[in-house]
Image 1 (cartoon, helix red, strand yellow):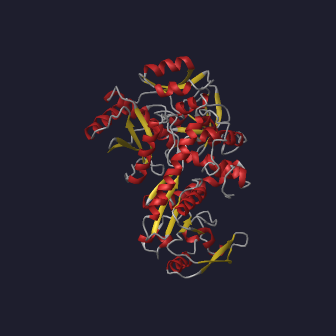
Image 2: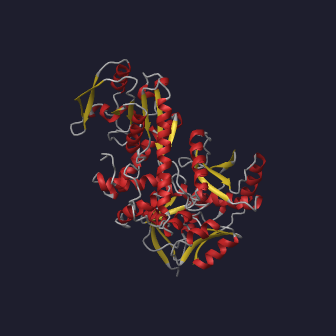
Image 3: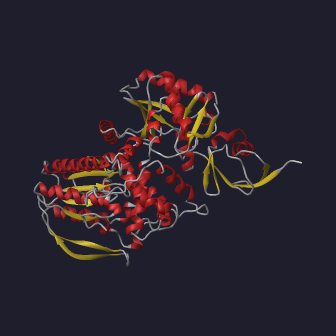
Length: 554
């Protein structure tokens, strides 16, 4: 008699399977020839690789590219295939998985080696061979010393450097044929799962294009983001100069009590960039309106206040206008597809009144600013009357700042548009990048808990809507900016860790946000803590989230 167990599979109901079966074997049973569309599984609010054994009463949802976690598995797996292919074509060079760019992943080689146009076809050919070989991807834990010896063989010196700063008895590695590597997060069961991709020439590196998460097989069209690419390039060069490209270096500096210098240089770079932006504005007499936009937890408030200080150094007397005070009355606020008020839609702003007020100010007239009452949902008069001249630039901060519709009446020559976000982050190692979205989420969890009365569960609940709003209202316009400001600080996650870990640990396995919480905790475990915050200046963007700011932000 067969020893069977019962599981529940989303979309199929309760099923009986052989004890000892893996999730991959179950997916083959259910999905037949389409099983390779399913890259991992969510089991009882936790993400698992498909080699995991099935157990009694599991609630299983198999993940495709349409699922955020399935998409991440695809990205890691195709990255591994790219690394393996480059080892064949360029055995003496190190591959770096850099960052997202234009719906793809930007990758390059270290040791100042560029990928030529002719190299692209060679690498693609090797990638296709690896994928067609359907090589099993074996995940295993090995003693740290054994892993370090393997990393030495495969020249993963960045991984050796990192793990020498950590106190782990074991390290999770992946064996893919005759190749060994370590990845933060799960991979697909074999290389054959990632058969849809393209490789695009993007000197000095390349762009890996993969199916976007709302399509099962179509590749996105690459849309160049040259301003964003320039920010990444500058940050990469700066990190190399300071030996801060990877986390192992930062951990070493923390262990050696050299991190104060990292903080000082990071903050000085921010100060220099803000001063340069202020100088650019003041050199053009036509600029009257400064528009600042960026996604959630970018540090817009602190940035705007620091920019105002530098404008004053240049003899300007800036005046701030909040787009939030131009909200339409609540009953006129558009609804989203869930039937809820969509306060992040540009239609939630009284565009006509905002533009008319800005025109009157530019023409030298006096206006009375509105004040939006968030309790009654009504626009009221504030009693604050303002008039401006060429020495009073108007700072307008809001998520729609780069959308031409927000200031459609105003000539482009009178505007200066700034996009701010935590655009870069040091990577864990050459093959494991840190999502800047994760950095912003961690910032927000800390700030919401400290200043807004929202616990970690509420922040997770709101985050999906926030991200949807960013994708619709902010990211499509970021290349409209005259300048981009990178608010990321290379040391910040080592500071934020001690604030956010206790909050994430409150999320248990019964909660739908457990897998996300566990993922964040896992990657934060690579960071050593910066306990002493005295070196962080009071006007640091980080102070907007951890407190101790010299500005009245909250």
